[in-house]
Amino acid sequence: MTTPFFSDLHARAHGFLSDITQVDSLIPGAVLVSASYDEAAFSDDLFDRLDIPQSPILTRAVPRRRAEFLAGRTMAQAAMASLGVPLLPVENAPSRAPLWPKGLYGSISHARGRCACLLSQDTGRSFGIDTEAIAEGRSLNAILTQTLSKTERVLVSNGPYPANTNATLTFSAKEALFKALYPQVGHHFGFDAATLTEPPHKDSLTLSLTTNLTDTLPKGSRFDIHLTLTPTHVSTWLSVPKP
Image 1 (cartoon, rainbow, N blue to C red):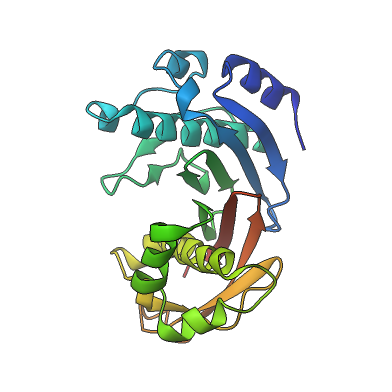
Image 2 (cartoon, rainbow, N blue to C red; image 1 turned 120 degrees about the horizontal axis):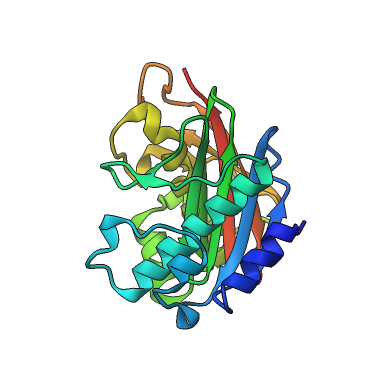
């Protein structure tokens, strides 16, 4: 779905953003907005054109990092517009995670030309979204050897998509799960803290905790994670109830 706000955003982006779309998040009350961005079309004046404040964390950032930040924060404003709430800046917490304005809860992701934001006003849930370029070559080898177990490597060789896409989806889902659970857990945990339980399905996959993260997130807790694909990227997202 596109809106007049998205059309205006596209015009102000001067070729930096394209394919700005709201898709069904499959989560009641949550909106999901995604787009493509072109790093080659990035310039610092786009922060003013798109009404995105430049964060202090960008002071020494390289252009690629600045482009990623701008793309992600613009998706956050597009998601706010879709929810019909005021367009407010999204600051950074000390952990560098997005610090949402009061009454908003969500997650942002960007990866090599794609960006997305999942956003809600639901005070009882936390949210995670991750976008990844479909891995090949060394990137795929890193996922297989550093983030997936032997069992998971067998599982990703099955399912509705090629093995490299399934592996990328599993990696992405673990990233999305980390974002959703971090507010409850309060510390970083490794890729081995959650495992794929079966080959990915067409529209979802399931992860299970392999260890106790908190009293309310015990070993064996299962999470069904939504997924979608483009020819070049995957996105995974979920929400989890707060204790």
